[in-house]
Image (cartoon, rainbow, N blue to C red; front, side, top):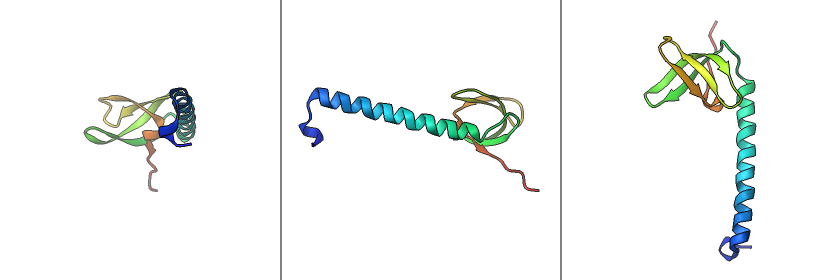
Length: 89
């Protein structure tokens, strides 16, 4: 069936299914990202001002608190936006 042939009820039902699936996929992505993080881990992420570096201080269900490398700022970041920094030995 083509979308332009669907009734309003059919479109609303389709929209609900799409929103539910989108939420499920975002939750999976979030859980995967959270599994890679731990308190004390050095991370990097993008801000409006450019790349930022910091240390994970708290992990919540949907966000991570990161203390800026210089200790002047605290960021609340979505876990999927964080990239762990691996120190070179």
